[in-house]
Length: 70
Image (cartoon, rainbow, N blue to C red; front, top):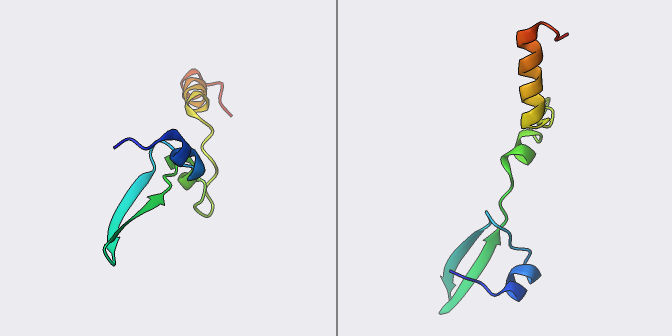
């Protein structure tokens, strides 16, 4: 389904968001469920730090294998 740009912009609809369709009183209603990237959810858990990124992970692994890690 393709929504016109002006509607997507007005509702802040982005790639990954979901649209929920419902019928109420003979009318079609559409609700937007904004998706969140997994990285933002990961940092929302208590005691869990934000993901530093893939490159930081690769660097940590390289340092661990080379013995230069802390």
